[in-house]
Amino acid sequence: MRIIAFFSLTALLCLFSQSSAAQILNPKKILERKANRAIEKKTEQVIDSLFDKKEKPKETPPAAETPKPATTEKTEPTPEIIEKKATTPDLQLYSKYDFVPGEKVIFYDDFSQDNIGDFPAGWNTNGSAEIVTSNLYPGRWMQFIGGGDIWTDSLLTLPENYTIEFDVVPIKGEAGQMTGYCFRLMQSYNVRSWDAGSTPGLAGFGCGVEYYGRPYYRTYINSEEGRDLWLSGHKDDEQFYQKENQLYHVAVWVQKSRVRYYVGERKLFDLPKAFPLASVKMDRIRFDDGAALISNIRIAVGAPDMRNKLMTEGRLVSYGIYFDVNKDIVKPQSFGSLKEMATILNENPDIKIKIIGHTDADGADAANLDLSKRRAAAVKSELVRSFGIDAGRIETDGRGEAEPVGPDNSPAGKALNRRVEFIKL
Image (cartoon, rainbow, N blue to C red; front, side):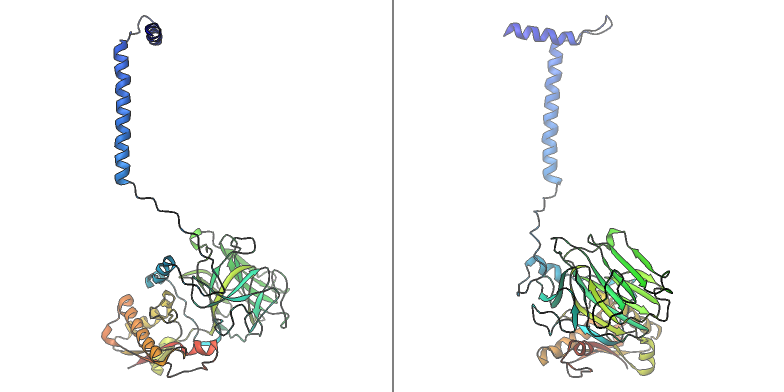
């Protein structure tokens, strides 16, 4: 052992032997330096270990598998979903939201009168769709998966100015992943059936998302006169991408040739000359090219002149203030309508108003009366909190289901009865 140690030490000395100018290091000092380096390294590891324990945040356990977005059975939401749905987005997120829905409802469908598992009445298809419920979002939804089209069976009579709204949830397609979807506003060629092709009908506006969530739009006019007037575009910024199993509120505002397209609180596209030809008159809506849940489809005649109605007629009915079913929390999509009312009040500081809530006839009379009062109070609260209106200028009341303005035996009639009324005092 001593011989081996001697030769090892000799070899070590040889490594440090250089020219006559080189210094011969003491073997004892070399061993001491190695020992010191080892001690320093170990000390650094201990310090790093203590620092990590103190500063490093705890790792978040992997999230549970996302529940299936739709089912034909009634399911209770998980605690995670309850927490998610209890959080209402701040109204101020919609500070640049200028959409104001039409005043008179001419089409509405939330599929509340359709049976679970059935194809929805009032629609047609060359593929398939069915009514389902979801453990993520309340109400009934039309679910379509695959390459078929679903369109309104009867033609729509649409004026020059109107708004279209619907809720959509992108879901997995037949391949087991999100495939996107397309919404079409079109002028039919074959009024009794579907129009084939990638640009169906005589003309159309298509909008939606691709399989990876990127939003897009396309306009087309299938005539010799309109062949050079087609438009298309998309949003490449990922902040605008839609995600699987997330709910989005889509709004389309048509004013003659101008088309504005909103998703959530953002206006994605504004096309001043989408349909510059007088011959283009849309008469049908359609969903296709993917997989999604659709509900709360609402078409209404153009935005009301809120100022004129309140100032000259003394009464204004608003359908642009939204609540979830049986809730009294004002949804952020209401910002455009609330902003219009706040502007009127700010420009006329002597005016006082009464806000009256109205409901449809679903549920008990007493519960509806209470809900209508709470909703009116919630609207007042938002005008005061978000727009700085003096609370002393606003009274509130509720009438429940007592004053219907439409038949309460259809989704469209119920949509007319759910409203907020402003009266000049």
